[in-house]
Image (cartoon, rainbow, N blue to C red):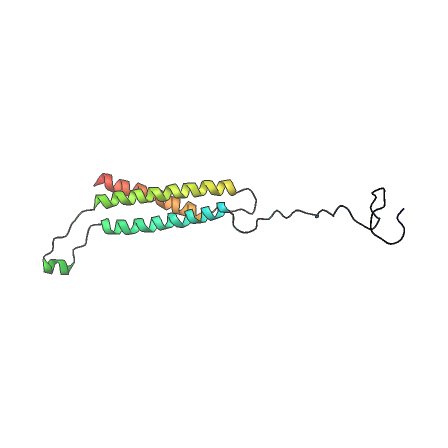
Length: 146
């Protein structure tokens, strides 16, 4: 038998009474997310790229618009185009379509990640997608009526 204060098990393999063989399990498991995961980063960058494409579209439409006739052009007798540049309008439709596709993928990824009550949908994707869809409709109407 084990005599005295040594902590070694006796010959039969029994552990001493004051040694805890099995550590205590934690009372709860911490299931909170730690930092941003890959899906959150993808959603963020899809949102950024879709807004960049919407801004690029506004610049393209600005360059495609007919030029205004100012007094300087009358004085210099310059010939000013009085119609829309349809090639640039079609490019802006394609840019908006790409933005809409990015928004749709971002919303799908957001739905895949939305599993908890604290998860939120990224409103920016919905707004950029709505602007893209409305812009495509307006540009197609403008192209088809002219």
